[in-house]
Image (tube, rainbow, N blue to C red; front, side):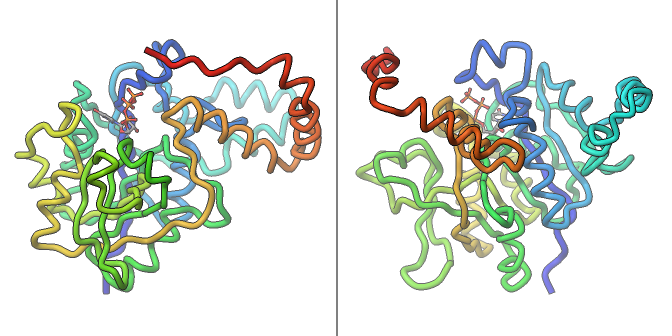
Length: 302
Ligand code: UTP
């Protein structure tokens, strides 16, 4: 039987340069899609998959994340005095209990691989889940939950995969799987379109064996001058199996402005309170006259 996955790592120490100035004093992971910060979607997804210990690798300006997952006594007392029971329930629902969260610092944003390695003492000798909060899935069942069944069957390492248009492969980690089945046989970080082994991207959800930490310890800088998780996983692939699960649902790369804005529209359209009204507003905005007045030809950014 596969060792149960009870710990999850959330790397939230990136600079979020694509969202400046919004991320000057606020972490990218606190950007909201409709009414919830990205990091909360990721924590809820992990809880749904059975995670009990939530480990955040933070950097500068990340104290708001710690506060977000803490009890806010003053706010709660004020809400109680005002009889705002619905709001109290929203705040209390899904809040991790005392002792379920841990925070560690990356100190310097040296790359995703380095951020994961910073959690090594909190992970110890257990396999763990890794969730990148800026990759947001809209689906009935969360990505990590979709991966758990395969982990329980095959053990070892499991990666969430998603098909992207071929011209976008140079933005992501890409894998090659065996022609039949789900075994991963190669992976490469941000390949050129011509060199890409497939169009299957790693969509920011992983179940990893603890040996990855040993390999990250000695991992040199790779693509973009950063310590890359993909490079260490490629080494682990030489002596452990990796399998891929093609994740079902709509995936939004909220690390990019376009992905983030599209996610907001898509989640708002599904909103139980105002989805229909929002759809009507969008329809009105997208009539021909509105477009003529409001769209500009895209300018190439230098
Ligand atoms: P990104 O590659 O999106 O980098 O990180 P970034 O710095 O957050 O954003 P840009 O590219 O400057 O706009 C993917 C995930 O890895 C984390 C990020 O916080 C994000 O969740 N990360 C990245 C770290 O924790 N540390 C790092 O050194 C780099």
